[in-house]
Length: 124
Image: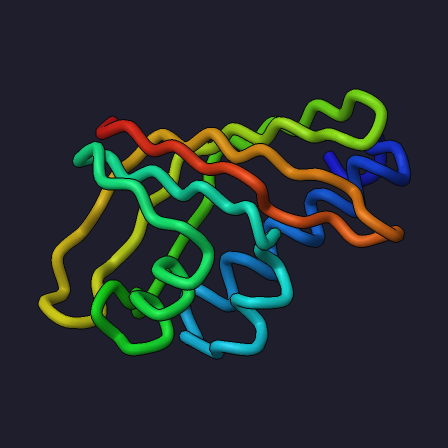
């Protein structure tokens, strides 16, 4: 797929991968870097988090993952906004439980960087 992506789509794909890696590592600086200050992060339970709540939950290990695989990803770019859909298959760090979610993320390009501004999950 990468061979057919535009430059913007490739940049979004790289940002999504940076988010995936940050969610597995729990690295606070990496989580803060990828998320916009206005982030609204929706869980499949209906719970919403802002940027600081999202970063703290992952960085503290409260909501950490030992593995995340993203499947069947699509990227659609409109000017400086990107919509990304994928199937999120993750293993929770605390209890080893598996999660299978359908995810929609919204990204905005700011000064050549793609920032996560919204995320919503549904149980697959």
